[in-house]
Structure formats: structure tokens, C-alpha cells
Amino acid sequence: EVQLVESGGGLVQPGGSLRLSCAASGFTFSGYSMNWVRQAPGKGLEWVSYIYTSGSTTNYADSVRGRFTTSRDNSKNALYLQMDSLRAEDTAVYYCARIVTVHLDFWGQGILVAVSS
Amino acid sequence: QSALTQPASVSGSPGQSITISCTGTSSDVGGYNYVSWYQQHPGKVPKLMIYEVSNRPSGISNRFSGSKSGNTASLTISGLQAEDEADYYCSSYTSSSTWVFGGGTKLTVL
Image 1 (tube, rainbow over the protein chains, first blue to last red):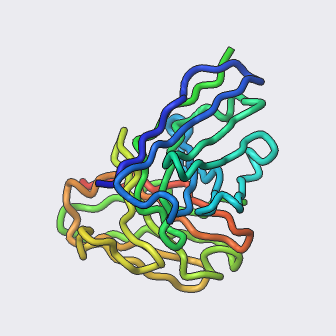
Image 2 (image 1 turned 180 degrees about the vertical axis):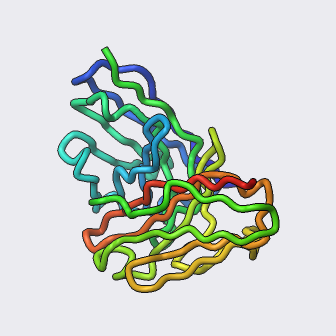
Image 3 (image 1 turned 120 degrees about the vertical axis):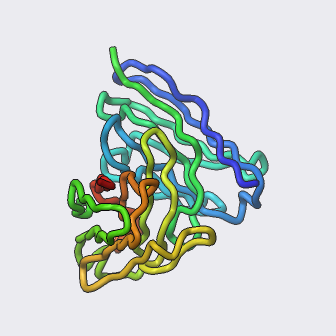
């Protein structure tokens, strides 16, 4: 059974940092590129970042570029999102999602990040 | 990276058909056959309903169909059922090697 489980969320002050993790199981993690997608409370979905299977290529939404870094450890079947210089507008549920071609066929349950003083 | 344009809400009665539009540009929807649609019930995880414009993943009812014309993609749900009431999001891959989502459409089954 495919599983994606996010962790590491919580409350952080503006300007602070947080590192999200996404633990993958039930499939060959190293064979799939991955995305992070977020959803602010009561709002729509927003693509955040992409990472290729090997981790050699990444891409970011303009809203997070230069502040967020996505990485992966295929030996641990883990995906990460390092979030620095956090702002109130980064408050959202963050999902990791598996990519097949370019569509997201499986999503984690999401983890809440709240940025507030 | 402007969001794709979707109607905020649509509604229909059980048994009827509804269509949700998703308008982008030649750099996303119009430039690739990489439009997908996701269903999200309140408090739940998004679920893939349509990929590559018109393909249904295994297990998705054939009441759901997708199409595209120019810069506008569409999701049609036929034979509306109460369980179809949810938010629906379109998404497209873009020429910048990024993804863009629509603002979401709330479907109400009357």
C-alpha cells in the first residue's frame, strides 16, 4: 500500500525556520519525482516545489524561491522541505505528492504549518 | 505563475450533468496535454480524478470526463450524485517546468 506521511509541522514565529519530512512506503521511492503542495486555511491548492528522482533537479514557486529548499534521501525513502524566513502567508497545510508523468497520483495526509507571533 | 481561472461555484441536481471550466494560457493549459483534475472533500486529501486532459485513473467512475479546447480545459460530471459534492481543482504543467492550480470550484448537489 502506497503511503506518504508528513511530519515536522507546527507553530513557528515569523522569520523562523521549520523542516518538514515526508516518509514514503509501499513503492520504489527513488523511481518517482515528488512535489510539495500547500493549502492555506480556507483557500485553494498552491504548488510549492518539485524534486527529480535523484534530487539533481529542483524547482520552486516564485512565492518561496530563495527561502525554501527541497531535498530527498532515497536511502531513507524520505522527502524534505526546509523552510526558512517564514512569513504569515506561509501558514498552510503542506502536502507531499507523488508525480507520475506530471500528474499527482498520490498525496500524503498533510501537515499544518502555522506562522504567527 | 498566475492561477488558472475556475468558476467559484457550480451546482446541479442529482442525475444532472455539470461542467467546470479551467482557463489558462498557451504557456500552460493550451501548450500541453498535461491538465489534471483533483477532487477534495472538506477536511480530506485531494484525489486525482482526471489526468492528461481526459484520462481516468483506475477506480474513478466513468461519470467523470475531461476535455480541452485551446486554453480552456473542462471537467464534466454526469449523473450527479450526492457524494460528488466537493471542491474541484484543475492543474496544469507549465512551460517554466512548474505546476499551476486553479482557484477551485465548489460543487453543490442540490
